[in-house]
Length: 414
Image 1: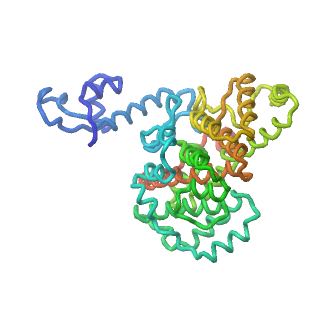
Image 2: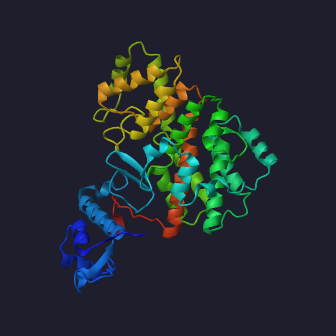
Image 3: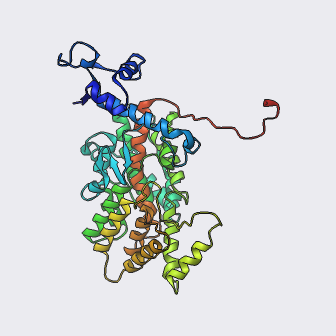
């Protein structure tokens, strides 16, 4: 059932007078409906206002107030550029459809989170039909690309798989959900070089990587849940832009995957892995970090891969949970002490805390997973969020086409 506000509540939420509220309605900025009783009389006060619509307008007003000096940074951690009902990052927390993602990571599977993000039942995700690709064909593709990295293999196999799917352009919701579930399975299979499976993804990864411990498999499950979506990051924005042109899910996901692979996005996990390796071989960890930070460009803020997230000034809650779980489930002879020591030393030197990228690379290192496993966790999970955003963008129906502020020579244009 939708919730509603009285005129007094709506005016208070918007920080305006009742007269201004009624002016908003008359100008079409807000809608109202009869309250169903005459408790406040027969005038405008007796009408009610949809709470979601009031909150949306309040956020727009707040963004407008913030936009003055930061409008030029709108694409660089600035004011929001579009509206979404999928993911919220606020007050140091991450929410999927209003549910705390960290709390979900303690028990939910990626498939259950996919259903939450896509607005369907978990059964709908689990029981979607298999992609119409011959086993022999898929096996031949895997054999041809098995020596390549997970990212390279997936970037080749997703378009190849799309070409084999007869309903790839279907726009009905059921067809889109089927395609989404098939995309999720095929991407995972490409990343781990295996046959597509409807088994829960954390079990597929555990099997592919030889993880026999149930508690460590649970760690993989939690990592997948926390990687599922993160609002309007670079890859997700790319997916929404591509989707807005009318491209199908596989094409949009291929674009998202290319963006995710960059070293300043999901590819940062490889840079963290290199940092782990260098730090492990340093004679003096603190001296090594000091030299590493001193090597940054003059005037730039010292930045190490895997530390300091602009949206979480008090620390990334995703990393906090995963590192806590990793410490609980690491074997006695694992390099967990090195992971903790590095995080502590960086905190002392810069005050920066670990990000999700650090936690994923730590899982790869401590559990002795194959090289690139951290990126595989990231990509195999993030596709669920891309699909949710693509579905939302399709429902919106508009082409994303921002304008550029020209700062070059005017020439004859002047």
